[in-house]
Length: 222
Image (cartoon, rainbow, N blue to C red; front, side, top):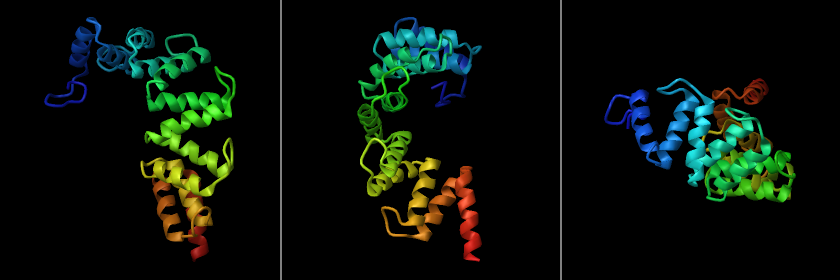
């Protein structure tokens, strides 16, 4: 409640005080919350090392968000020595519990072959699991795979399906991709009105390619 300012004035210091009391009694959610506050410097001096300490305690109890966050710390080398293998290990634990962010991160590791042997089939599998839970970055990358025919059979209709799901959640790159598919009539009937609509949404978020294409469309219209 103190973190979110619900029912009380937002106060990270008091949030830290109460989170610590619960964390020291072994509450995994509180341990994770404490890790987040140390990571971001909310209510306390920022410290990745202390964030890792609390993430580890929550992760050992199988708390998926902490497992994912610990994986991210190993991936970035924040508070620990950078280690892709350990990042994958913790991502996998969270992913197997159904945590979408971890599933997506694990999928991208299989794409790049970082911390694990490159594997297209597993990359698609984990990205799809996250996408099916509504995680926009995974929906976008799955759309890219179908658009390019990369790791899956090329299919504009499936690309459009996944781009749309991400675009409707405000993912700028997906909005641009969707707009371009309408602009070129790929996987859908050509529709400049829909194209401009989605390109504008992307441009409003600062997507430079969308701004460029809109200028071209405007010039051609004149």
